[in-house]
Length: 175
Ligand code: PNS
Image 1 (cartoon, rainbow, N blue to C red):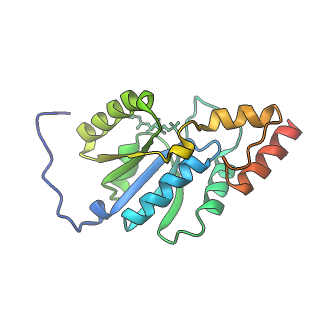
Image 2 (cartoon, rainbow, N blue to C red; image 1 turned 90 degrees about the horizontal axis):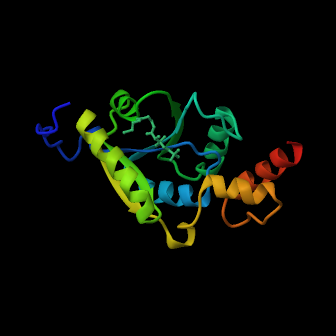
């Protein structure tokens, strides 16, 4: 990686410039994620929502369940597709000719790490990152917090899409 070498600017209309990726764990997808995906879909021709398969981190929902929920809640967006990936995000970008990663920033606390990843991803593959300020309605929201609230019987309507809320209630009741 030579960070002093800047990649050639990409012509405006290449597929890579018109394709964006929203990567994440999505365990499960929240209204905060969905807000970012909706807005990315209005900006780019194609948006890939991809679940990162992290072998060292289990989750409440399986990969298939996460993808199924993402598929349900993005079904109204014809230019959005749902997939998964292992390994580096930039390798997924290369394989699919994606030039931009879109990330929601909830607060300053998100920024430090997101900036490091953005700079690393640019250095590795010239993939740009767009930081999108989260809708303030959802700036406190995370999948972990939602799971904790649901676990103890709190109200999660309004913070996750209805199909996700239903699955959370069932999963935690059966746990
Ligand atoms: O929803 P999350 O858990 O905050 O998502 C984090 C994710 C999956 C976007 C990040 O961990 C990631 O990109 N992982 C893939 C591995 C990788 O590319 N690591 C180097 C990042 S510079």
